[in-house]
Structure formats: C-alpha cells, structure tokens
Image 1: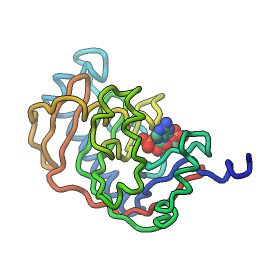
Image 2: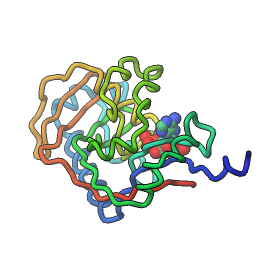
Image 3: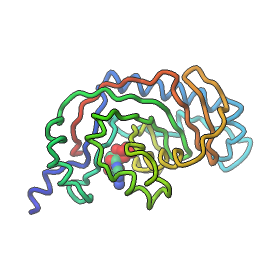
Image 4: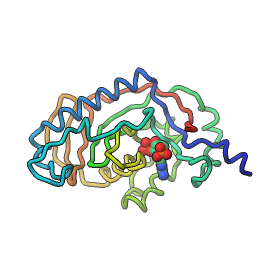
Length: 218
Ligand code: A2P
C-alpha cells in the first residue's frame, strides 16, 4: 500500500565520512585546477566552450551536489523498478549502517559531469544490483557487456542544468570506448583522452575512502 511505499528511501548507497569528503573534494579540485592548464586539454577546449580561444575554469564550471556518496540502488521512494526487492534483500538489511572502505581508482571529467570511479570488492558487489549495467544499455549502448559494478561512482560535480544521474552514464560511456593513449603523466596518475571532452585519470595510488552503507530520504 501507499504507506509501505513511503518508507522506501530516495536511494541506498555508501556515504563518505565527512573527513573523507574533504579529502576527496580537495583531490578532485587539485585535479581540475591542473587539468585546465594542460596544453593537451586546451587543444580540446571547444569540447567545453563551443568556441576556440576561450578559456574555461573547471573549478567554477562544476557545481557540487550535496553529500558525497556512491549510489547502490536508486529507489525513488519506491517508484523505481526493483526498489522494494532491493530494500528487502537480506544482504542489504545485514549490512545496513556497516562501515566499508571504498577504493577510488580513477577520476573522470566530461562537459557534463566530474566523478570518481569506484572499484568494488566481491563483498561490496553483494550490495550492487546485478542488473544495473544491463539496465543502462538503453542510455549507453555497450553497457550490458561491461563487468557488473562498472557503473559504481561518486558524483563530484555537475555542469549547470545537469542532473547527477548523468555521472554514471558518462562513466559507462568512457568504459565502452577503446582506451586511448596516455596524454599526460600527472602527479596523481595517467591521464587519457576519450574524445568529445571526456578525460579519465587513472590514480597511481587509489584513494581509500571510509564510508557507511545507508540510505537517503531527502
Ligand atoms: P549519482 O548516483 O550519479 O550521484 P537526485 O538528486 O537527482 O534525485 O539524485 C539522487 C541520487 O540518486 C544521486 O546520487 C543520483 O546520481 C542518483 N540517481 C538519480 N536518478 C538515478 C537513476 N535513474 N539511476 C541511478 N541513480 C540515480
């Protein structure tokens, strides 16, 4: 009935501890600050501005979107497919409010979003809905052939008028493309370009982020 539906959250996910939010936020800002000064990036500036010769300040370009987290299941208060099944899953109940260490292995930027790729362990994959990547096929062709968990990410920021749901789609799109040449060796890791304003930095040392598995009602 309607009452049980209202008890479902907007989404379930891993929420970064506040100290870790600051660390990840600062690392992302450092990356953006450096990225828009690189000649390789400036060469493709029209991907962001639509005009050559124009500069872009990536730190201003993206807006933060609330508490940093990695969504496992978007429930939309019960309106999303599989929401109540997910909430009833014994694994979800067992690990609700447990602490997890997420491994952030890459940062990515597109003209729409900036995010961190999360590489899930086998235990963490138990909380990941197995059909996520298959259901993304309609939005991003090729997603269904990617390994389960490929969409796992943290939205760090969105361009004006872009919704956070876009970040996972941008990540999936990058992962379906052939891996490009390394454009630049940065302090944080190797930077690759994927065309159309898509950049991914594979972190030399993954960031270990302490999180709590929980849900958000809004
Ligand atoms: P993400 O997980 O990429 O950050 P909103 O504020 O737009 O309602 O979104 C709340 C959270 O749920 C965000 O974290 C967002 O994206 C995620 N989200 C929104 N819509 C979807 C969707 N259709 N599928 C998966 N995740 C979604």
